Image (tube, rainbow, N blue to C red; front, side, top):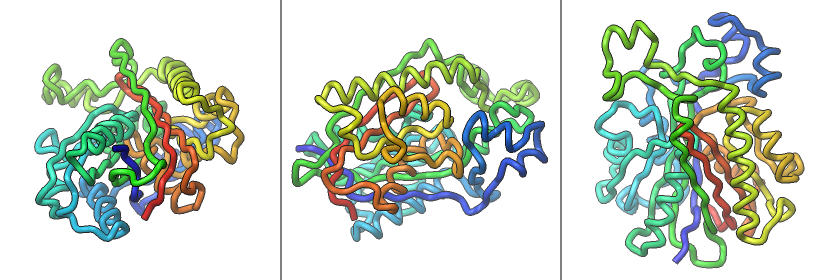
Length: 329
């Protein structure tokens, strides 16, 4: 038994923050941001809106598109680094809100690779034969952990959510394979140091701004380009494919220059690549899930097409997934 994506959905908050809006908050400008990242604007949640709220919207739309009941869902897996709270899990909040009384679920933390890690986990649950419908979501409220005094970081991220429904495949179209890796030696280059058991929240951690994301941009850029390009090339070679066989490449949307470097390495043409970083920025665990939903909405994928996904994130974590696209609802 193999697993296929039967339904996709995405959610972006209505509020838009442009680069010009950021100019009022931090020492930066539109030209600097666009030239270095490819980002023009990003979405931002309203006050009181959190990760679970975005996930609930995605989950409900998936149920509606697939025309099934929440009780039909067996498992809910959410890739996120910005849960509503440390406990209970965001998955538990979503399970309750949508009424998926038969489902169990949990959150998975692998940063920008979180959706791919969650997807592979869901695929294995389907392939075990014990589960028929697994809801895999990627969502992050990144603006909740941004330091708007750090111009090198705060311009990069936005809020959003996306998701897919996994079901057993009835034909030759299914999720073919995933290659996933972790290298903890890179953890110090992209992290959020405060709020965990090593640095519990105190007046000191707040004063020292330890509850905001920190990164060494140059180190991350170098590792991201190599990691995403290498692993994407490896999975194609493993299955006897080349860039010419790929209908659509959906990379993690961290930086336009990183994407361009990967595309060049894989020998892909612009029409083979989905890019939406200009309007959504880096939504971390949500980028690829949003990209999949957008590709379906725009008619860029058809049954039988080869789709390639790739991500890189804190940890370091990175991975690639190869799909032969099936029928979606």
